[in-house]
Image (tube, rainbow, N blue to C red; front, side, top):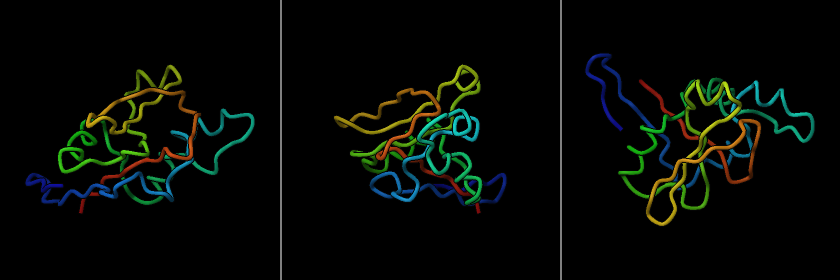
Length: 123
């Protein structure tokens, strides 16, 4: 996606057509995972990203990615949620429908088979 001259790092984003299949059906973060009483997903997006050594894309980064081509036309991706929203129990995600990038909200504990996350890596 780019090169940061200040840190001398190349910046990579996930560019799979749909949210990566091995990263779907996860809630937003550990707090959300622990708050579920029944039917807990196996993991959370934030925990998976941390274990992979990547950062979840921000909304701004997600919109940058969408300028390359159309991604997430059938899936959606959790994006880094502002603290103000997260403290109230929510989390945000994005997708592309009708040739438009949409940002939505859900309870952070929610998870769906078609929702995953995309990551950023600096090398």
